[in-house]
Length: 134
Image (cartoon, rainbow, N blue to C red; front, top):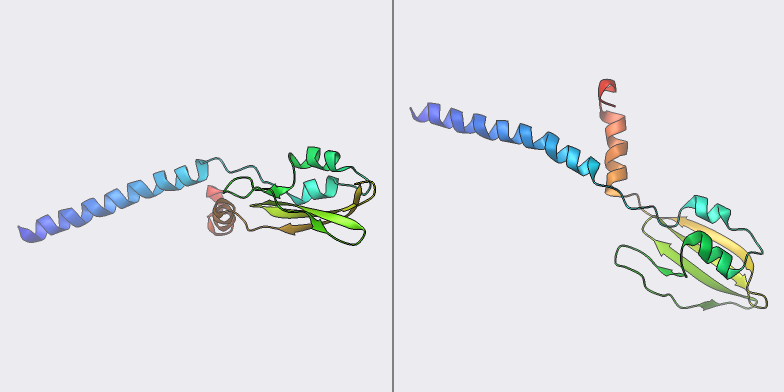
């Protein structure tokens, strides 16, 4: 009698685990991902000679730290002939040097951020899942 009860309990646990896993996987993949903030495509759209206002129009706001914690203004970085601004996001950082005399773009740079856990999960799934599941 005890062996039957233990077998039943083990079977119940396995059924619960196997039924919860697909639901959890679906929910993880169905959660909408954040808009990528500060991508390489945005960086490529910034041209030398643009004004700071034009850059803010492309990037959606003033220079600052836009990571998951919210917005924080960053201090200006002075150089000899230019001043720098940074737009920091979860998906990347765009750094722009403006000429100090006319406030136009002199030089730009992009540093990619970390992939989100959802991107890593999807990449793993595409690589490991059987072809009929993709």
